[in-house]
Length: 187
Image (tube, rainbow, N blue to C red; front, top):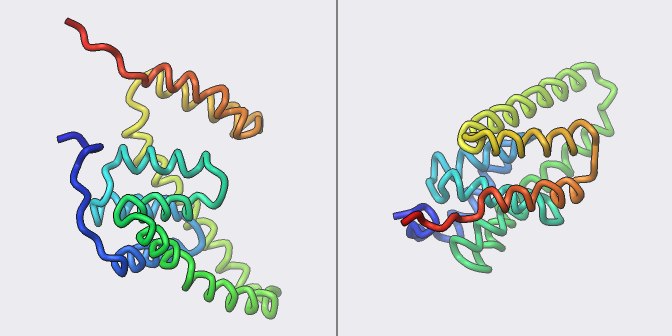
């Protein structure tokens, strides 16, 4: 059975909310995509690697916060609109409360050197998590010369030249579609 037609497990709305709350709190300071992959693909097995990568790509292209888009995608996949709402509540509620408290504390104590060190350490951890996800997903996605060329083209345009994301997608997207378009079976 292919991954796309695999049966979706029955998940409660509470489990969706707790799962996305776990993702949000575990990735405090960054690395949300990496934690999402770890929880949704590796731990819970709610999605396959390819489906996760497709969803993350789609969620990054669409307007809005990437992880909120992913919560809507996964919640809708698992339980429809109530699932999407549950996933968003789980993803955002406690982090919003925490960021309000920490924001107040930051503006009150931001000149304390120890706090600056903590923030630098959190930044380094976030970069490490993001690189970890890039390496893990890159092993899966970059299996051919064409895929590597498309990756390098997008990285060159958007990452180095700073060409706008929509323009990069408009240029690379059609090429990727042509490359990935299903080929007729040979007889």
